[in-house]
Amino acid sequence: MIPEHKIQEVLERVDLVGLISRHVELKKAGREWKGRCPFHQEKTPSFYVVPEKHFYFCHGCRASGDAVSFVQRYLGKTFLDAVRDLARELGIDLEAQQDPGMRERQQLKEATDLAAEHFRSTLWQDEGRSARAYIASRGVSEETAQSFGLGWAPNAWSTLAERFQKTGMLDWAMKAGLVLKRNTGDGCYDFFRSRLMVPIRAPEGRPIAFGGRLVGAEEGPKYLNSRESRLFNKSDTLFGMDQARDEVRKRKAAVLVEGYFDCIGLHQVGVRHAVALCSTNLTPGHMQVLKRGEARELVLLLDGDSAGIAAVERLAGPLLAAGATARVALLPQGDDPDVFARREGAEGVERLLESAQPLTAYLFASLLPQGKGASFEEKMAALERLKPVAAQVPVGLVRSSLFSALAEHFGWRSADVEAALRSKVPPKPAASASHDGGSAAPARPLPEKPPPPMEALYVASVLREPRLLGRDVFRVCDELSHMGLRMALAHATSGQGTQDALFEAGESVKRAIETSWRQLPSEGQELEHAFFAICREIMVRRIDERLTYIKRATEQTPGAFDLTEETRQLLSERVELLALKKRVLEELKPASPGTKAPMQPV
Image (cartoon, rainbow, N blue to C red; front, top):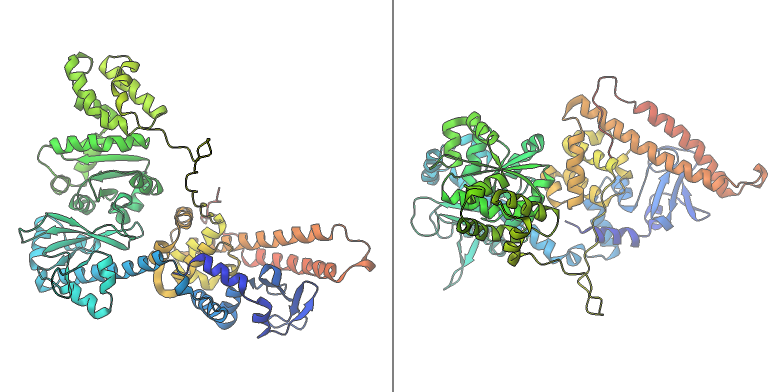
């Protein structure tokens, strides 16, 4: 992926007049250059190049854009090829200048993709018989196994390593932790062996790591996860979120379990808003993933044994610290979520979820069942167990409310409860800089500029239905001002697909596109009508912005005989813009009554 700052460097350094004059005869016209438009037939020149703004536009056909869009449009290049061609001419080595971390991330992606396909195909071959038998014993159907991309790593030392060697990706595989260097001699061996492989995917659906369940062997831990990398951080990843995201958004809730097969089993019976931890801890990163997925409530579905009860105490701290709305549903003694789901079906699971208790009510009742009637010793023991929970809740309204609720349950004063737990009060955040002239904390990077909502709606429409790009009669794609959106559109329309486009996009672009998807109709004629309405809105806004500029620039114009050449051009442009606006409004008429239109962004 080409870094955005390198694309910006290309646009700033290119001689736009020199580039366009190779194909168009240009003449100086004040601060601009003028010629006949190369994109439509015309007798009177209406095509202008503005070198100061690195921009061209045509008053006749409304073609406009920068150097990259000109190369795309005139020479029929893709966005990425246009950038590379211009960079080559300017002597900008995009590969050499690329962030090493981004290059490594790309290598890890390719290695992980290859491994996922290798494991998946091996599962359905003869050597995957034992793994398929295990899958069947867990009640997982072939359809579900295919949906989650399950695979098999055979009990061989170097099957995957040899494949990486042949493709020249062995070093990448080592960085991803998929193969390890031999202690003695040359070569590498496979990290995962004799394991049923469960791909761990990003919310966009691309594999970023693996969980391996030991099958048919006794050596090694039961479960083994990929090590963390630039691609995979277990503190920011929830298993199954790629499958659950639509249902989570629909219900505004998620079900959290602790095992991969618990999550898979729930999905199989139809409880499709289930996700699982990739570690034992719930982190702020996990809470952010759920927040982006629009989960307003989290239901903990845990084993009904002592381990499940302990898990509630372990998870309560991060949930309370995040101010999350959470409830607890405990399974019957001895049941796992997937076993319960297989026996009781979706209806049984839904009944259990509906009966879930609020987190604090469950926590207080399990730690101190007798409440106010408990002995002093029992209350102190309960407070001791609550200290790790309270230690994670920052000073503020949530913490004071927690102490008040505890005081009510214990029959003590809130101040006494706080005093008993005070030894674990979390430290206040450090100041960004000391007031005594000490060194300042490292500056935070500037937040990524959020995309304009209408532009995000345009890109989201094309990502949902690529054929719409061919219906963009006014070339709104050239009007996109946000480079992140242009990159996402370029990736999606260059054969890499929507998943890759979103995987590569920055967080603000992902959020904008996902928000736009929820505002758009799902498919068909309604989506097409919505797309035309978006194109219409963007074009009319662009025209109105230019008309406003022309009005301000010509307001102080003296008599008609004193008009400057520049003013005459602006007034001529105004007439052309008004004609174009009329054409846009006529050709991109609003949807007929009863047709669903996109929501206006707020």
